[in-house]
Length: 257
Image 1 (cartoon, helix red, strand yellow):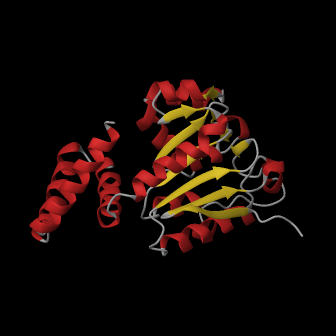
Image 2 (spheres, rainbow, N blue to C red):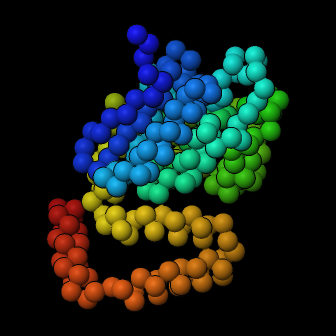
Image 3 (spheres, one colour):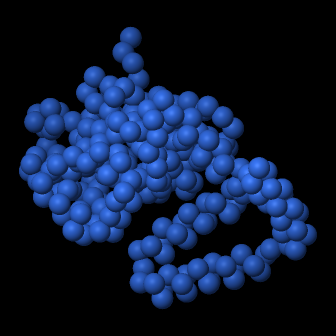
């Protein structure tokens, strides 16, 4: 019996982990894998017990991008919602941690950029080979990368097709941190536990507020925040706020040692 294209685990309360599972193909995104990933993301989005999602790859690669062998036999179609995992990730209502265990190439790079935050193994590498394969990106790489690391660095990566390692990706602000390979999932799950411990009724709209504001001019984004803050303040109960203040203070003292 063949292995599933995607594995779902629930390693701890509030956290789901999805792993791309085509290690023999560097987790290349075949049509079947893309569709399985979209379905899984849609199902998890409806599951309110999931407060945070970790996305990673099985084997030595995170994701090698679209399956070029498959594309050599059929027309390119990445716009359909049924096989567009980047749009599914963009619509996922709760935080997504990308645990980048190895190479993230082209479409796999775009999949990583669709996560809310990235923790990279020291074995991780990133490359945009659209210019060498002969395809214009359709999942946001041409726009997201320049906003994240600067337009000059983005052009260097996209025009050359060269790889950068995890440490350089961290210096450029592409990933949040770099850890030893054996520490990748423990660190990702520790962060997931911290996020799952926050108030879900705040984290989901806060994520939406950050994402929507990021695409606006600064003044418009500030107005968006003020409107959201005012709506929230109108229904805030002082006694609930006081109870949470005590909990936050206790956690701060604990983290301070």
